[in-house]
Image 1 (cartoon, rainbow, N blue to C red):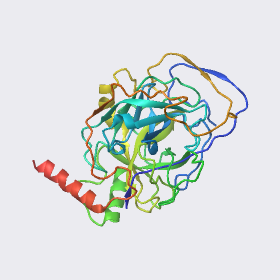
Image 2 (cartoon, helix red, strand yellow; image 1 turned 60 degrees about the vertical axis):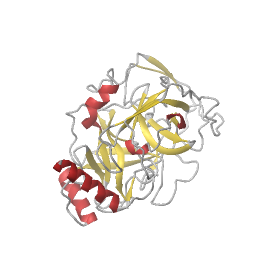
Image 3 (cartoon, rainbow, N blue to C red; image 1 turned 30 degrees about the vertical axis):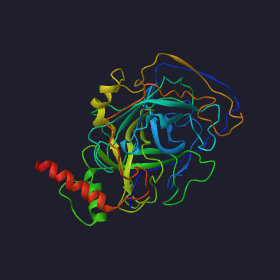
Image 4 (cartoon, rainbow, N blue to C red; image 1 turned 180 degrees about the vertical axis):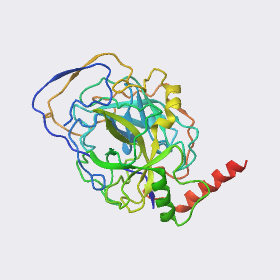
Length: 356
């Protein structure tokens, strides 16, 4: 059964207030050292991780790539009502959104890649413009985007993060702490045959398209699961975290011969720059568009509770919101399961497209 991937993680406590300076750095957390087979993370370990909510319900993960833009999966957006979406930054536990480290933002614009057609198709990438720039803190920092020519070898260990089911059909329990899991990159020549075996046939159009890649393990056991589509797959290169993938689709959760499938971020370098011309995607630690800032680490002993999206820390203001290149889907993009018929119809569509 096809599913969109998900994850979850946990903070350690810091008693000391510190001031840190950074010069437009991305991919370098101030804090450094349940996904299926995953583990809790430290608070602030993945400061680019965001929570995307629709009508006050969590629907997807995503990543902060500049002070004004978030990247997620296209399949997260099955509604054109931009005003109903809220982005939460600095989130550690979904049940504790009133934490002083957490900030909410309304959405100004959602841009869906025009290649996206259906769940599991190419083009599963979206950009979300926040209503106003966010202030960076140790818990809110952008991730780096890799250069187009940057390729990592199969077997490279990377990490996926987010909130979601700890196994298929079993929700992450409260306080719903952000999870992390280590997965290994899998080359196309190994991954495509796995899916052909799983589905029982070899399609004329590959399951794993040019803008996709696989990560996980042939034997399963560690993987993403339902509830956290759109979140990042990041790899550490020279002590800097680069986002190589966006959680896109898969079959079941941590099943053998069905590793997670991710949107390849480098494939969309030019498309991203079309909407964010000032973003730099060529040097480690420099893919943000802000000047030198000061980061103040707050005490983690403050009271925690649910955040009213119209109250404290909220920057919601939906004037001028827009939705671009979006296609309304008959079925929700966040369903835990979707039939093989959907894939078959999609493949037929692609084949006909090539004939035309």
